[in-house]
Length: 210
Image (cartoon, rainbow, N blue to C red; front, side, top):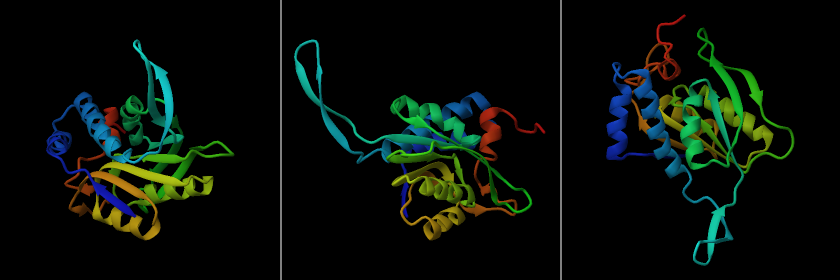
């Protein structure tokens, strides 16, 4: 597994605001978007290009365009908050959904929805999940995409825990992982500490709503 931590002054600034419990949902969503853009910028380095020609107002120009067919795979529901920022940079990307939830009794991921087309998969799948905690959802997504036949998979998470990273190292040897921070660890409820709480609740303004 290849882990890249996007350690940058701008990342640290936005992360601090994102973690603040008093940050309102609208700003929280904006911060998720900014940090996602920074993750995508790093995660797309090295993508293959092919030559193409366009006509400028002045002359013909020999340029380049992305060659790979890219699929975005947000882990429902928190991963939905990362879709629009990625599409702003990769508008040609396909979007495929995986619905996973954590069983509160076992802390294990449960798949309840999968929308992956039969036949030829994408060249690169970018799994989007703001939080990498136990790693269960990430492993399940990785295994699902491997069965689909995706040759290259990248995981983009804003905040991670060492336990989740260790699990991915054991179970997902060829996965590329991009995170903005590796936190202290998990508490007894398997939430990341210091973390930022429940990312899905904060993105969709459902904190305290049963």
